[in-house]
Image (cartoon, rainbow, N blue to C red):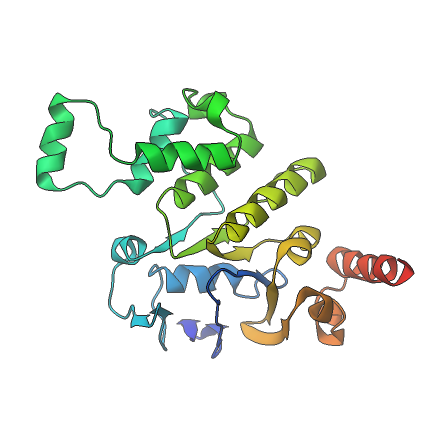
Length: 251
């Protein structure tokens, strides 16, 4: 896949495979092209190349069609429906109403998607907030509701864009446990996040982008020791990787 914005090449022949039941971490410095990659495969920006989901080429398919085929995603900004409860926010993602279904909802309480919503809320320990409104939630809980909503769609591939942004260390660790549980239960996931500790600790496989190109890929223990990756993360993130390396060698 390649993506260009005018004369800027945001992605350059990125070739990436997510195996079924795998948690793949996609990392890289700011501007590396991580979010652009998710935007492209989910149909929000044009690209050259191909996107295959379970062997089916998604060329020419709109974002909502890709979602119905099993490609779900979250966004860096948390877009919840402020006039719906937490349960309703999550349930709406699993509903694909027909014209008759829309008429039925006018005269009766909607039940479609209830089971999926309740299960997604349970996974993230959000049952007690089921009837709360988004305005009543903390930043961490809003993040979890966004991920739960994507999970309620029962996706073939769940793409998470910066789910840990704005979370403190304890909240990020809790999120990581939830995400790992989701994958272990059979959901395939692609995780983009700047929290290196989170990504490296829960991913099965990691791909590293820099300036729109893949510079490294492999298991987390291999990637974290790659000289090119350490060089790309000079500064705070680079220091974090070096510290993790030293800690791992000491243990």
